Image (cartoon, rainbow, N blue to C red):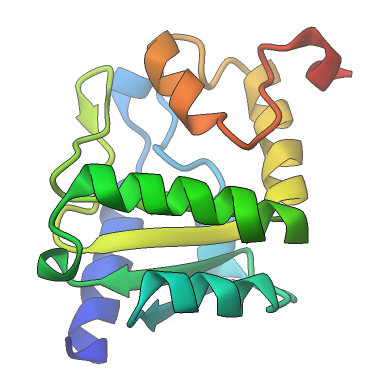
Length: 173
């Protein structure tokens, strides 16, 4: 992979999709906090090598001022989305969540569709590493503003795995 091409593709996905309000999402952009990350230059992109090694390294890494670190892999290195998501789940449980981090996976062969909107980047296998406590805080805030109002229950169950679920009244306090 050529870093400049990867960077250009991901920057285009973020700027032309993640931050753009969408009528099918009640006027919300797919990622309500992406514009803030762009404005603050608080996201980093790294080409990954081996997911296990990369996640172990991230588990020791402080995000500092970064809101998101995106690890990028070729699709042919992780062709099986079930294997990929299971690996991310296990590494979240064993490493990341214990260090107040969470890895959110994106695989081009496993479409994430909400209300007719496909959230996937589409070309690369991605792991977006974020602060777990910060993500939980932001999720509670946008939950109250009805961001997730019409999202399918099955999808919400998946995205709140390893996170505070705002549907739980205890988490909303």
